[in-house]
Every structure is written in structure tokens, then in C-alpha cells.
Image (cartoon, rainbow, N blue to C red; front, side, top):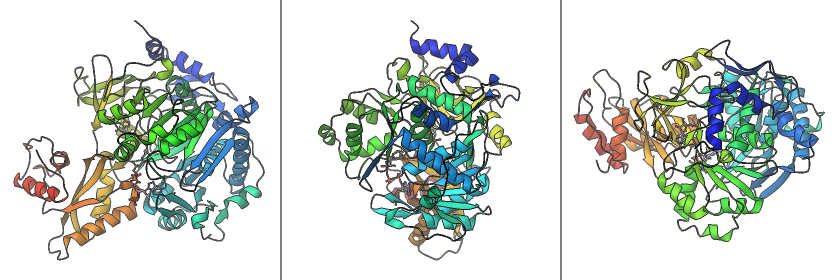
Length: 633
Ligand code: COA
Ligand code: AMP
């Protein structure tokens, strides 16, 4: 029997233009599109060509115009500063219009880039929306990245202005962002015209005369600016993500497609209606934050919760339940690692009992595969649908999901459910031939991808083609492997490249290796993601030292750990490293990272036929055992 989901899905495949054209009617356009899908430059597709719109207008001003001005747009809940604040849609409009004026006073025009390096404060959202208001392109950089990573992004995006806060607050420590920003500017070749700095109390920043401008003073001096019509195909933002090399990839989200898909997804996937409260417990620096803390809930007229805290330790494992009860959250979206952290500290769910969670109707998990034990625990404790859904920075919204708004499908443990409307997914072998149902293959999606995905990488069309479209002509290569079962459910199992997933954060082992290799006493190294009960995976480095190095190995390991923290940032969570005499390689010289990972995880592995010297694996096993890994085969 055909249900609502099946009908919507089939229509999106049979008639994508009609399907997405209708979805686009739900947003405001200054000028209607000429074509829903523009295939003139296939395989580089565009959505809503010829249309003009403004995302900030749709996310903010439109709601005020439609009488939602007094409704809460943002609930800022910050246990780390003991503050709460509500911004209504009217407040958000006036703050955003004034901050857009401040940006314009710094010379920001349509198409200019603005880097935002901020913690989870309302001003981060205001800055993003203000860019959208002007048609400027924002690029938010997560606060846990070190100056070098920020500098790389600055050189790629070449921002006219950088918006930053003086500090972020992590449980137990204040992270002074401004010295990190100053260092990044020193490292980068590109120079911004100005830096707009939000001063926060725990660590006020020293300002650099002639370059840094105080946020408050800038807003004080600025006039409100109206929304500018922007081409649907113009970029809304660039968000850098880890790739297979050290150079991050600048994922571009376009204005029209991004807006249409996100608004559609709120109702049809997340089952959210205007006026209801949605909470994505992530960070504005990640794609989940862009899509589901900021744009989608606001486009849909929801109230979004901006939580500056952690699932545990701020102050206890009841923080999520408090926020849900206090702010009447209808749907929560977070990463499985957050639930594992709560479960570890409160396995019986005692803290849950203190709060009225009757308003919570669903829990969405993404960022990594939801392991069955986390799924079962969350389901038992919350007694609501727990939905694992799969997506990526590149796609901007779910590739696979149980679309609650279209009628819930039965939940299968370990599966991200079925491809969402617009997505035609296959599991294929190396030659691009579909594998049998239930067999693991590379997960690829038939082109064109639906709207709201990424039309290109920032100023790197060839890298976009080479990285995503070349290996399987006519398909998008997701970089994930998995299988599709008899019922069409998709199980995403692992990456096909060297990207690892640490606490729902995506990291490139190649990038960590580049940093380790820069240590003067490291001759070569290999980094792999080893299984971790809390964070899913943790990076572990095997270091081969230069011949003749006399210093104690533990000193070099400590320096290597510090180097990664300084160069990539604390977010890499790189704390495990060990010195080995040699790395296992194939006869052609390829490092056998996959085998090393299996050994570390204590799972079954086979001696690779192409290995150069099998004895090396015994030494690796012994070295990994000193770190508490490689316990059994
Ligand atoms: N600014 C500066 N430093 C930051 C930071 C930020 N915005 N965010 C994290 N860090 C630091 C942390 O303080 C930590 O530093 P430490 O090594 O000195 O302890 C390091 O980066 C690693 O952070 P994280 O991986 O978040 O680990 P954690 O131990 O602090 O917390 C969890 C573990 C599971 C509680 C945490 O990862 C979490 O809440 N995850 C929720 C899911 C999520 O946000 N997913 C994103 C995609 S949906
Ligand atoms: P990011 O781009 O940081 O959002 O990371 C995307 C990657 O996280 C994907 O390519 C997957 O490897 C992984 N991922 C995200 N969601 C899921 C999920 N529900 N199941 C399995 N893997 C996931």
C-alpha cells in the first residue's frame, strides 16, 4: 500500500520540477525563478535560476510582517554564563538590520565574504543573518579550531571582515578567541579590512587600533539596512569541512535551493509547525548548526533554542532534560555521542525523572551512525520515536531519514531509514555497478542532487568534480559506504576515505598526519580512527622517529599531541600516540591503516596478501597494547 511518504518520494523522482517548484511557492521571492532545475551546465546543476530572494527576509522580516513579531525567535540558554535571553522575531529583525548596517559601514557589499568566529551566542546568529541580509557570504569557523585552521580558511575565502567574540566558555575554562584570531591574521596572507569584536566579560579582548572595532560601538553608529534581493544561485555561505587532504573543502550553499529545501524539511522531515520550539543541540560552526539551529527553524517560523553548554557537566547530565522542559521543546536534534555522554553519567536516567518531558515528541540523531545500544536507551527512557538520519556538510539536509511529517515509517536499528524525497541512492561496487541488496558498497546518489545541497566548492569547481562526481559518472559519491536492505532501508556503515568521526565532528586523518609529520623528529606517521565508547572514534597516531633520535619517546609523544592541539585545535581530541619502529606497508609502499585500525579495535583481521613484512604487525600490536588497544583478535 502506498503511504504519504511513498507518494511524496515517488513524485519527487518522477517530477522534481513540480515537486520542488511547489515547495518553492512556500517562500517569498522578489522575482520568481525562470527554471526550477537548470541543467544547462550538467553535471553542474542549479536550482531556481533567474529567481531573486533574500534568506534573511524569509527567516525574519516575513514573520514580523505576518504578525509573528512578538513570538520568540531565539531562546538563548547558557548554563556556562548562567544567562537566558529571549529574542522575539521583532528583536531579531532590528538587531540584524542594525548589524547589517555595521557590516556595510565596514565596506561589506553583496558577494563579499565575512568570516564569523564565535561561540554559541545570539550575536553569532545575528551576524549570519546580517550577511544574508546584505547578500554577503558568511563562513563560520568553529571555535574549537586553532589559528592555523582559521588562517587557511581566511586565505581561501578572503573575507573583507571578520566577526569574532573575545572568548568562548568551555566547562572549566575560558577560551580567549581574540589571541587566536590575532595569531591567525598573522599567519594568513590575506588581510581583512576590519574585525568586529564582541566583548564578553570573562575575557575582554585587547583591540588592535585601526583594525578592530567594538561590536556595540559599531552597531551604535549604524543605521538599519533593508534586505537586498539576491540571485537564487548566489552563495548564502561557505562552510569548510575536512577532506582527504589537509586543505579543507569550502562547501558552498546557494541561496534559493538552500532556503527551499530547509523550509520543506522542517515540516516534512521534522514535523515542525510555525510557533513550535525546535532544538538542535549542536554548534553554529557545524552544518547542523547552520541548517537546524539557524536557517530551517527560522524560515519555518519556529522558536530555535541556542544552547551554550554541554550534555554533561553544565552542571549535570540533566541539562538536556531541563532545557526541553523549561522551553517546551517539541523536537530535539543532536549527535549520538551526546546521548552516550548522558547515559554514561546517568545510566538509570534518574535526572530525567525530575523534568516534565511530555512535550517532547521526537529525537533526531545524526553526525554518526546511532549504535543500537544508544538507540535503545534513548527509546526506553524517552518513549518517543528516536530517528537516526544521515547527512553531510555537503548535502545540508538529510539524505536519508524517517520523514515524520510524511508519516512515520517503522524504525530499524542501525539504519538511517529511507532516502528522503529527491534522493536516489545506490550502493555500488568500484565499477559503479549496483551491489546486491544487503551487500556493502559505496553509497552514491543519482544526479541531479535535490535543492539545498552544494552546487560547487568555493572557487574550486574542478576539485568538486574530481572529489565527488568523477569516480561514478552521473552520481554523487558520498564518501560513505553501506548497504540497502530488501525494504529500501539504508545502513551507513563507514567512510570510504580517511575521514573519521570524533564526537560527531568530522576530521581528516590526513590533516593530522601532516601536522605530526612536521615535528622535526618524526620521520613518518599514520593516523587512524580507533573505536571509542563515548566519542565513536578517536584519532590514534603511530610515529616513526628519525634514526638516531636519543630523546625519551614519551617527550616526543607529548610534543606531538601538543602540536596537533596547537595546529588543528582541541576539537581534534588528539591524545593517543605511540612510537613504533616501522609502519606496515604494502609492497608498493601504501600504509596499511585499515589493518592497523582493525588490530587496534581488537576485531578480526586478515594478513594482507600484499604486505611487505608481516612481522611489523606484531610490533604494532604490542605498541597499541601499551595504550590499552589491540586487546584481542
Ligand atoms: N571552542 C573551543 N574549544 C572547544 C569548543 C569550542 N567551541 N568546543 C569544544 N572545544 C574543546 C573542548 O573543550 C575539548 O577540549 P579539551 O581537550 O581541553 O577537553 C575539545 O575541544 C574536544 O571537545 P569535544 O569533542 O566536544 O569533547 P568534550 O569532551 O568537551 O565533550 C561531548 C564531549 C560528547 C559532551 C561533546 O562532544 C558534545 O556535546 N557533543 C554533542 C554533539 C555535537 O555537538 N555534535 C556536532 C554535530 S551534530
Ligand atoms: P559532517 O559533514 O561533519 O556532517 O559529517 C558527515 C559524515 O558523518 C557522513 O559522511 C557520515 O560519515 C557521518 N554521518 C552523519 N550522519 C550519519 C548517520 N546517521 N549514520 C552514519 N553516519 C553518519
